[in-house]
Image (cartoon, rainbow, N blue to C red; front, side, top):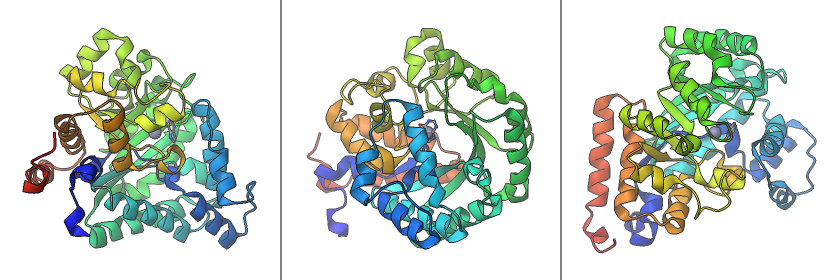
Length: 347
Ligand code: HPA
Ligand code: ZN
């Protein structure tokens, strides 16, 4: 219903935006998990979709990762990766997403015997359809699992080189504490040599020092999460001065105990200190909301003003890896959306 788009109650949800912190494996909804389990004859430790949802209670990052990696076992065929990615894109399209830079974790699949090609071909085909049928542009970011070895990461990068033109960047995810960014210096050096843009999860559960390492050792162009930068004044100065974006995921942070409640999340403080903050969903099937839902929830809880929300949407395009003229086109479209006469009355 085109006429409803942008009505004040849905302003935050419908704002045109880019999503920059989204793990495609984290978009596996319980319904699709059951469907793929049936299709592939993979036994599940759950009796029903409701049973799955009830299992999604986490105490920290590791307790989530254990369940998240287990869920990935239903993903076996190219079509499975296509269906997963297409389901994400259709949901995202309904929440204002015009561009998505999507993480995938090849090692989660290759270590189970699923070929790299199967994973990337299914995701890539869905992203192409997203471009053609939903008008969502996208980029793919290959993440290394930091709980595995640096050598395994290097091997993964070597496997990826055949698909170099399908990938825009490299990232670092999984269990943070005990696996500092510096462990992956060599593979990030190599990735940058071939023109892949580096990002890294840092300062989610790990200390501010890991954010320094992501910047200084890996030369990360964005920090994923990064919320623990608030503990280090000098680091805040560096992030502000360098205009380094933080891809913040407020619903994820509450579900994994990084903040006790959404009201206590530091997103608004970071934004008002001049950091280039963006809002993202991380693993929406597990954390209770896609990116538009996340904008809405944060807007209500913190609260965020209309100006804050527009800044966050603007930042999402500015922090993306899109070419400058495409950023400008998105920012123009955002301005037109905000200037709609029907939206003039809300504050
Ligand atoms: N942190 C680290 N690894 C992850 C996450 C996260 O939030 N989501 C999926 N893998
Ligand atoms: Zn993440």
